[in-house]
Image (cartoon, rainbow, N blue to C red; front, side):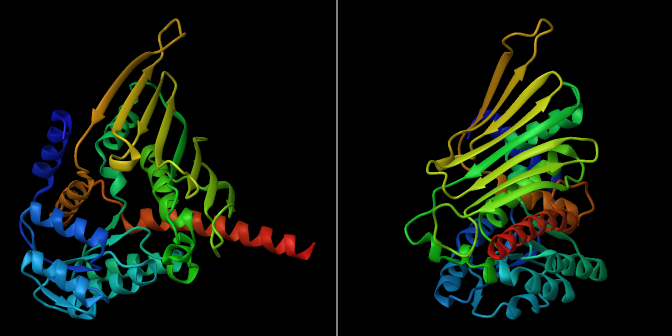
Length: 355
């Protein structure tokens, strides 16, 4: 990791570290493993792992000297556990989170937190009733270039934010159309609820305001599946800020790009590391005489520290510190936008079928 990246990460950890708790991991796949690694690196203790695939649960549990289980209730209802990470398929996120909160656990539940607004609202209601804390895992908020762009938005050093343009996509893999992400009963939708939810959340994160849906078009271009492989959205805040967003799994070269346009500058965040390319923050500063802008680029290289930084921030939230974690309210705004877009798609299909 570059020197600037190391400084940012250490600052986040030092600012939000509050102590040690006992954690359970529910869902021992790729993301569950990343969360467990991040917890251990912060000195937290993983004591229990659950997954329907008991072999996978056992493998991750062994790494941390934890117990393993095939049923998630053995984690949510264990009185020795203080907090849980829920990294299952979308159809289980809400019910597990609600049960964990009812049994006195703090909860980090992966995005989108549910397949529809009702499932996400159930988490918010359970949180309020329990008095425990919930972070929804929109980890992209904690990429260093994203955090720097957020600071620029808040500082207003280049004037007010005018509009945004976000693109996020990958190209899938052989058999991708048969995976759970393309099964609406499990996932709640397709590419929009998957990668598109990050773009929606970041639009609100930068604007500092709700961004209601102004236009949507969810289409299937390539993958023969019951859910969309491309989602096109326009969001617009009450103040008139617009976000043009495109999420795609026909993006044959992996891409992440989020551009912010201010009165006196353009700020671009490109890449997320690995196959998405080196994470960079580029500022194009307008000159008084206009013309070609001054350009400054910062690179954030090395391992992805967003998982660790998000959990460090969540620990701060539990300890009563200010937080940048996405809340159930944030997740509800995102899933409501997605539900509206899917409603528009259904209406278009109905009209087309009636012709």
